[in-house]
Length: 121
Image (cartoon, rainbow, N blue to C red):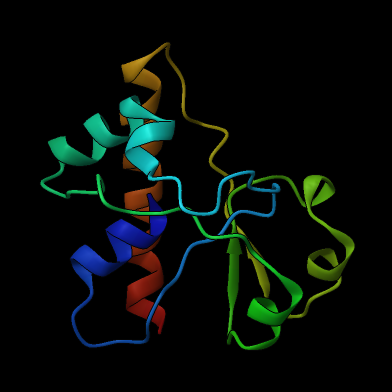
């Protein structure tokens, strides 16, 4: 969500790539095959993520990045990321609801954080 929202609202700034620290079993799996509720939430925002592929966050990716934004608890991150001075964590725990409502609330929280982030870069 964060990458798609950043790309949607940002036309001039640095590239933004999202990755997960959770191991990915199928590196070529489309987001649309993993989570239709996420796809629906983004489609409501006018953003097509159906062809998006999840990326595995690696120590190399961290090393080559200026800043890393995490949406999960620092306790859940791998050691190489926990200790990075590039790490910024975004608290998205305010997302509530069940099913699609949860994803829409999560999208709105991330959207707000992305827009704030764009203002400071």
